[in-house]
Amino acid sequence: MSTCIQKLFEEQVVRTPDEVAVIFKKETLTYKELNEKSNQLARLLREGGVGPDTVVGIMVERSIEMVVGIFGILKAGGAYLPLSPNHPSSRLQFIIEDSGAKLILTQKQILHRFQDSLKADMLALDSISYEGKGENLECINKPSDLVYVIYTSGSTGKPKGVMIEHLALINRIEWMQEAYPISSKDTILQKTPYTFDVSVWEMFWWSIVGAKVCILAPGMEKFPQAIIETTESNDVTIMHFVPSMLSAFLHYLDVTGETNRIKSLKQVFVSGEALLSQHVNRFNKLLNFSNGTLLTNLYGPTEATIDVTAYDCPIHEITEGSVPIGRPIRNIEMFVVDKYGNKLPEGHIGELCISGIGLARGYVNRPQLTAEKFVQYSLDTRIYKTGDLALIRSDGNIEFHGRIDFQVKVNGLRIELGEIESCLMSCEGVLQCAVIVRQESEMVVKLIAFYESENDIELERLKKYLRLFLPDYMIPNSFVRVNEMPLTDSGKIDRKALALLGSEKYSHHTTLVGGSVNEESSKDS
Image 1 (spheres, helix red, strand yellow):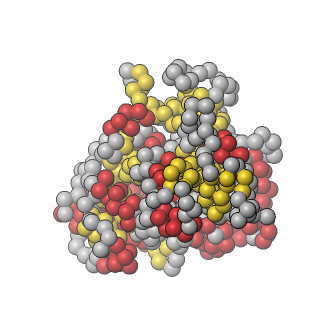
Image 2 (tube, rainbow, N blue to C red; image 1 turned 135 degrees about the vertical axis):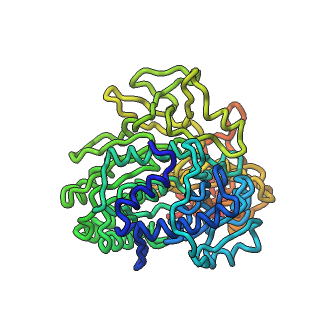
Image 3 (cartoon, rainbow, N blue to C red; image 1 turned 90 degrees about the vertical axis):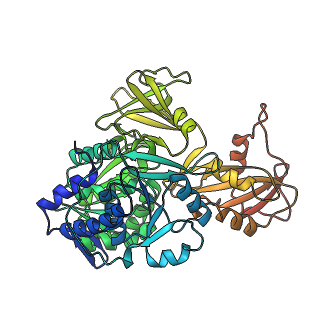
């Protein structure tokens, strides 16, 4: 196994220097061109002090610069930290300070937007001349060096940074190539926002085998028509969906009858939420029977390097509710434990634990949380406790059975409800609050915030306040003011009671008194 991911790319450059590597709209870069530009950037970064375990932020839109920037950081020996230009300045500043990133690679229009609000050196990738030596730099990384740091939602009200090392990433990418081999004839669609770790395999898999990556235009990942047009015009063969977006995509294909436009598509991967039998059956009807496209269900937390299990969905009709998450990938072991940490036999539901090469180093500046979640289970076994409930079937496949805590996924995006609640509690006038998730339909999942307050608070004031600290996908869809929070016998907020209230379709801002709706507010019809 190679010592660093950039070395695998450089070896591929030697094999296919003139093959197209990156496509973005009408722009392309060959393997040689991408290698030279990222080398020129890497020299600049290394001269500035970037080396092993140096975290370098990158805050760009999906673009050629995104790929050059990430590869340049790695070639310099550093680890990349993806930052979304759509997130609030306060959240970005916390991540920058917490990670220790001294430099942020960006684009000119983004630099102008944030140069006064963020305290960090910023370098616009689209203003660099890219001159000087284009030869490969000496690889100074060890397998145990950081390759990237991704921040996920944190239950304490602050996001937490997950540190992934080169060896873990190489294991994950090489497994994917072994299990689902691709070649220079293939094109991967890169459409996942790079602040989420699915983007990592979209970013690197192609680069070690001579395939292409086609970058979807920014903001188009939620529009089936744009995905279809990009797939058709670039002969995309591989793409990823979260199940809710897959459902919307399949619905669009069903209504428009445009399946014949994406005949190049041979493999779809899904992850991020529970995949249901109706998703698989509809997929097969629309894409497998006509185009031969295959569907694979993946599972894995950010803390275990993207995915740790895989399940190839059958092409015959299935009737069971949720689809298994599959068996562990190479160099990964999975088992289920009871509340005392004892391993459970097949068929028993318990907490799913992961061990093996794929485990993260831990959380940035969170030794206590790292010790809680990454446990030395035995003398030679370190595990990550996922907080997911699961059982292992007799055939070795694993079934997902929900969460132990209040971490959820909405449209594939990982959210700690506690982070939203912490922000809401800090809003003036809010006395107590709780946030729940409501599944309105197969394609629609909503966040509902319940809160107590002495006086009514304007909806726009609540939303405006939360947007100072949270990204848009974490802003609740509905706010329900209650006279008093329902409590359990132990004095905790009764979330099951709130879920019953949440099963009603409330307007965006509703007031409940004693469990009933005030006369001045109304339910959606």
